[in-house]
Image (cartoon, rainbow, N blue to C red; front, side, top):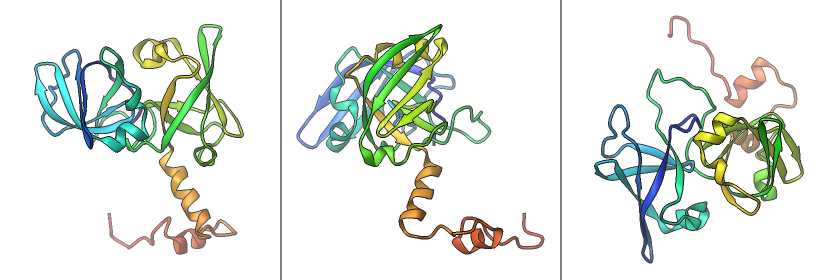
Length: 221
């Protein structure tokens, strides 16, 4: 699990794609504590497993489907990508719950300076747009962001200078493809609505019957 707070940008050193598999290697500045084999790292919001470590170069094995369903298929050697290592118990939760399972891609349609900040506009499929809410959270290329405007399948977010400087947002332009992960809590609500499981009247009893909360057992911690 991740929080959507990017920790580093790594530079793509090698990118090998065979018929059914791929491997991507990225170089970063040193991590503290050092990365270990088998760790989970979010790369552009995609949860990947460290398969090889060579100094500061980390390699990840990737299914071909991942290249096809995310923007990794557009990556080239020399590109810089957002990276975040998995959360540990007690780590600050500065963003929102990000799983690292990309729901789909969106496209940048406009980048507009707004004072010291930047406004980015995106379009996405209707299916993805159904999981977005005004002022809700969304992960864009692994960055936890708040939706500032929402209309149909178009949404906008604002980027402050710090985020622009430490993430790949500085490289985005109209036409760029980005990875999107919808807020996990919204997915649960959407699923319950689709299955007709949401109670018509929201009461504690209705929530218990739905399974969203459980009965408290006396003496249970």
